[in-house]
Amino acid sequence: MKNYIRKLFTLVLIRDKTRVLLGYKKRGFGQGRWNGFGGKVEAGETAQEAAARELGEECRLMTAPENLTKVGELEFTFEESDTLMDVKIFTTNTYTGIPTETDEMRPEWFPLEKIPYSHMWPDDELWYPIFLRGNKFKGAFHFKGHDIILSQSLSEVEAFTN
Ligand SMILES: Nc1[nH]c(=O)nc2c1ncn2[C@H]1C[C@H](O)[C@@H](COP(=O)(O)OP(=O)(O)OP(=O)(O)O)O1
Image: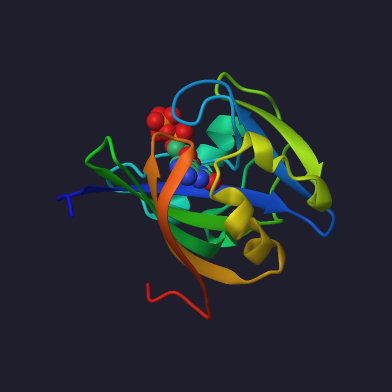
């Protein structure tokens, strides 16, 4: 196994009983795909602080870091890269503001039964059902390029260790 350089990322999924807010990524990593809002955790930030900041930067919704509940921990690696993306996934339904398009993302609400998996990361259709059932999960996905999952693990968990 490669000696990966681990980098911490966040992903925020805003949802209520009937719909989830996704953003169409207009540039950068994952361009052209629908995803939650998130990005790199900067030095000196907690993952929750970074998640709240990125939510504001990418779609103008504001929330306090303590409103964000961790629902998932996923690791992504790629044949072509030494970086291990360590992604902490949060959800909340407590926020202020109106989803607004930014340079990075175009937000849109999707009914829970109409999530656009064919235009999302290929792992999403595997773990969103766990998330949508209200459960927590952990997993790892190894990619060839950005479209092919070469190996994976995924399991539901009761809680996280940290
Ligand atoms: N396979 C995957 N499935 C998924 O659902 N989300 C993924 C993913 N791989 C990465 N992500 C998420 C994590 C994070 O929210 C986002 C990548 O971060 P960014 O879009 O912020 O990266 P950028 O390089 O554009 O950085 P910033 O300058 O920090 O905004 O994509």
